[in-house]
Amino acid sequence: MAEKDHLLPPPFEIPGPTSPQSSLLAGRQRYLLFPTFTLESGVTLINVPVAFKTWGRLTPGTRDNALVVCHALTGSADVEDWWGPLLGVGKVLDFSRFFIVCCNVLGSPYGSASSCTQAGGETVWAEALAKDGQGIEEAQKRKLQWKGEGWWGPEFPATTVRDDVRVQKLVLEYLGVEIISAVVGGSMGGMAVLEWPLLFPTRFPGLPDHPSAKRRYIQAVVPLATSARHSAWCISWAEAQRQSIYSDPLFKHGYYEPEEPPRNGLSAARMAALLTYRSRDSFESRFGRRVGKALKGGGQGLSGKKEEQVAKGEDERRRKSIAADAAEAHNEGNLSPRAKPYGSNSSPSSNGHSYFPSSTGAKPAETDPALSPTATTPPVPNTPHPPTELSDEAVTTTSNGTHATLPPAVSTAAAAAVQRLVEPFSPSTAPQIFSAQSYLRYQGDKFVKRFDANCYIHLTRKMDSHDVARDRWGWHFTPDSLSRDSGSKPESMEEEDEALLNVLSFLSVHPPTQLKPQPPAVLVASIESDGLFAPPEQVLIHRLVEGSKFVSVKSSDGHDGFLLEFEQINEAVGGFLREVLEEVYAREPIQVGEPAKEGGEQRGEVKESVFGEVEDVTRW
Image (spheres, rainbow, N blue to C red):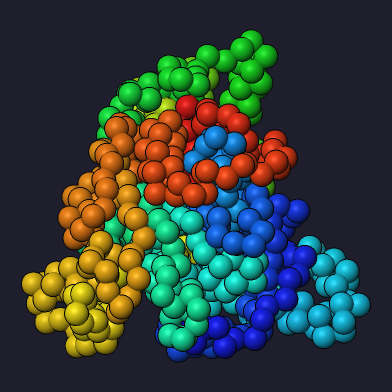
């Protein structure tokens, strides 16, 4: 399909935003609106928005210094946010030498067409453009106030990594890029990196007579912490995360209201994902068996006097409710809106303001985050549980729903005559909240505020479909012959492996031939402790791509090492680019201003990512 993309009508630039989540990025990215775009599935979308961001300038005349960055699963086009320490003069992403472009993938909530954009296409923007731009200001006002009514939801069609690469190529054409210096990305972004030279060995693969047909379009590619095909291990983890979302009663098969998303399910999915992004050693060294919130750099958090007083007051108010006692003691991290409250036979109130009987004096759920059915991080108790031994007193629930305290002498006899005996929980029965738990709950809470459940499902399915050999079963290349036939689907693992070898051979260095230009230079990067995209998967790519280079990044942080080990990545990838892009580095740097102070412009430390894939475990 890439062969015909150059025939599509040109896009129009719009100010945005296009989704509720992209409103959070106001002023930080640009948007193109494509009149039409046909997906790999055959579905044709109209008025398709694509969000992107650029740094630096395109070299006049040659237009050959573009560096494409591909983001990971939950990232955005704002590279400053999640790879900030690699962006800057003298860094890998040197905007004084490169014209850096990052596009938001299809299916993401951060601006490109997705479940969170207008169903059927961005008609609001299209209508404004049809009026010669007279309605642009009004359209922007409407979109800034838009809360998601009438969005695609679960009906947004499936997209693939190849769809992302194709539409991003159209963005580069709009920007005037003629040659790509390098494509860099990790994890899901690394999948796109591998697809770029396979889809576009030349600038216009469908135009064999074009002047660019005899030269390679991409000079270098750097896939980090990724695979040539998504493994059963990764697919299984993604399915477990999706099932977490499906199990939330608010999910409603994806037809939830924008203001009532399945927060609990999405939060649980994020927690599970975080465990795959890190390593056992990473969690042990940061948390161990410490309790409560850890200090930055590790260790148990210590509350100040003022904080202790506030915590004590909140604790006393909370303990006025026996039901709250029980919920706190169970330490589940959330309350199911389907479950009846502890110590009550009543149903949740119809107005949704309380999940506890009014007689208990419990604070309404909407004002007490610890008791909210959507809360995932209950407050950590900082004071001892008051004495509540049953030998001293018994608390019963009477027929009218009120609580009565009986003297010890009559407790046993009276208990049989009442509806229920509610046993308060003692300190010995209330499990502690470990700092590792608290960290996961914090990340889950934070994630649901910035991401969307349908988008998460969509993107994980996109990754599941990744296989560079898919529908390329008939590909074959030698210096004397070349075939790009789709072929027949393999019937055995051996045939699948052979197809993968044949496809990746298109990226191998080969003797000069008239059949195709040389492939880009390839550096494959691996994280030594990666338990999700295991190192053997990167080693396989390196072995099948003859002439490629390989680097193993030392890290104890697991898969997230590609987002944390900035110094090693800067040295390895930067050195590789200097070696293979001598012409670009030989030029005088372009004098451009530093990025705004939102994204770690010249800093090497890990910063708090707002829309990115990773947070440092010591920054919470």
